[in-house]
Length: 302
Image 1 (cartoon, rainbow, N blue to C red):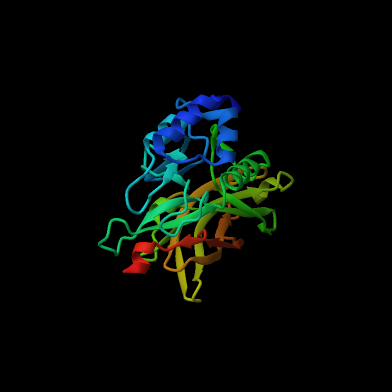
Image 2: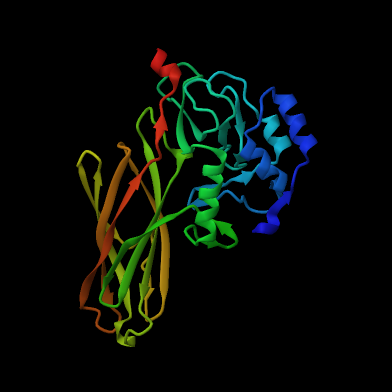
């Protein structure tokens, strides 16, 4: 992964970008880009990937010249410099190089157009970091600590709560989650989350404990306490067989009309050698919450 970083920018390159955009770059941004100038664009995005059956995101860390070309002067994103870009979704994370339109100087955010406003300058923001240092070090710490899984040489931005694990007999279920800003909105309230579930049977289990998943049951609760129950066959169209030492993982998604919520439930299995004997395996409760957001000043003024 470290080989994917580009060679650092020169002081004169950074000075030229400041002259081009008419704003000073944050000191921590300049310092970081002297060490590396974004990433080489021939590898998956270093700032995280996300894959669903019909959606794929991979964010590249932009070099300073490309970022300068995307510097925003338009209403709604005035004085904002892109840090990342996903060619598949058009998604970028921005840093506010000046305080404007209700943004704090140096904070990092995902833009989120207000879909209920007629004013194109009405852009809400999901805040990701208070400064470039806060944003970048938080992400790197998650990567190097193993907090974000690396799958097929791509960093996936799933967050796992160590307490979000449940064991029933020989089977352990653990869950990690991620918020997808590109599929979410504040206006109207629609918050999209994906979750990755790992089902594992202990390698010490007896061979006759091999079993197959038949169905799932979910109890989904939003921040208002509204409950939805969902039951259905298999998971993501599959009926996985679990045997001693085997791991099965899958990804699915859910949405809330509130900024947070949680899910819990169970799987129903039958033993392969005793097909008439069924049992339930607990799915631990896992919470999902969107990042702090700021409503567009264009909406507040109107």
